[in-house]
Length: 118
Image 1: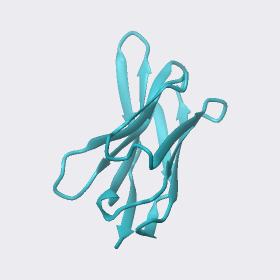
Image 2: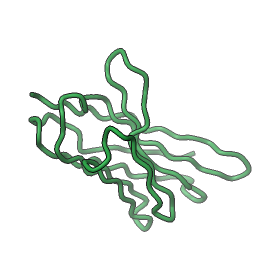
Image 3: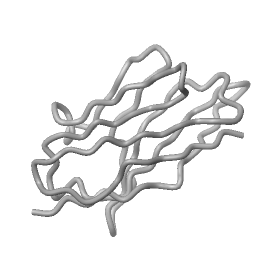
Image 4: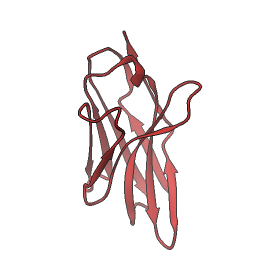
C-alpha cells in the first residue's frame, strides 16, 4: 500500500500563487508516475500534471506556462507550483501515484481544496 498526504491548498486571489505538496509513504518502491488531478463541482476529474521518476513531465494545456510539477525522489514528495491562478483553477486537487510491480496500481491522496477568488 501507498499512502499519500497532501498539503498546501487554500484560498488565493486571482493572479496569486500556491504550492501543493504530496508526500508518499509505505510501499513506495516501483512508483513511476506521480501527479495531480483536479475536480471542480459538477465536472469530471481531469489530469493537471504528472511526472515520472526520471522527471519527465506532462501538463494539461490549460495550465501550461503557469503550473510547474517537480519531484524529490529522496523525500518521496511531489510538488505543484501554481502561479497566475485563475478562478477556473478552483477545484479539489488530488495527488496520485502509480506503482508498477507486476501490474500498475494507482493510489490517491485525500484531496486538497484550492479556491481562487476573482
